[in-house]
Image (cartoon, rainbow, N blue to C red; front, side):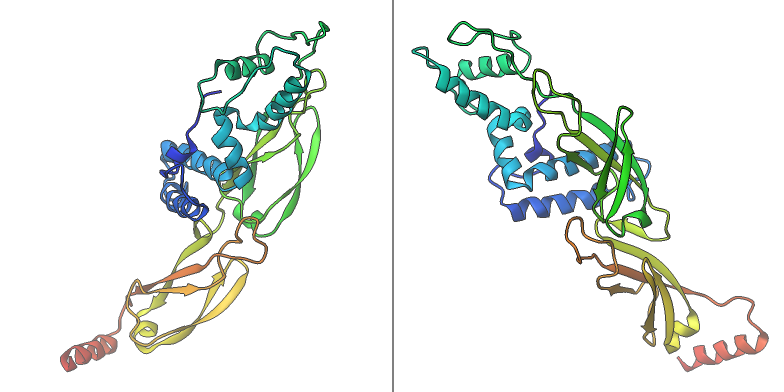
Length: 301
């Protein structure tokens, strides 16, 4: 498997703090979000990579394994266990291991013998050792509508050879990939099962534009409401709310409805915001009397 530099993808240093990682992810997610780049396949692929990098680096345990083992970080537990067994069974022919960033050739040989090397091998007592291999990882795509992810929901996935039932957290992103441990192919020689990588294809079937956890929507108001002020009803994803339009509201005025955006992924009870932009519509088919009144107004100015 090719090495992917997650730090480079998020445009951060290897010493970046968790706050730096979060900030970098939000910045790139907004920039590359599929809703803002509907016809840009490259941007969509980069968005998936950004999600993948954040999934690993925002988790301290995963980040530690990634920093030590690089592209093989997902096999870290197996490596550690095998190294432990190797040390305990070794008699006089002791081998040393360094981190993935080191230059110790023995460590590379160890990786080969564990995953794709000389198949089998022998223990110090001369008995054949059957190397355990992790099962094949599986990839699947789940199509959802935006309204489907406002709450946690259970879904049954048909993987062909079996069906599994999972809970999908509210607020998943379009293009986001999550790992479901142990739901891949069967291991070899008693090795662990592979993992399932599930990518979400979220169709925005609403009039709202989604950017991260926030929603955006244009709302038309009449010239009279803009000048004199008014009370209007605005639709949100969870129902209607009343808004007061202030007198002399200008075109493109933006108001924020706090907590009326998308649910935040894996943060129960936390929501983004909804931003409403007022679009003032000009009156048409004016009567002669209305035109005369506007003329009088212009003369007053």
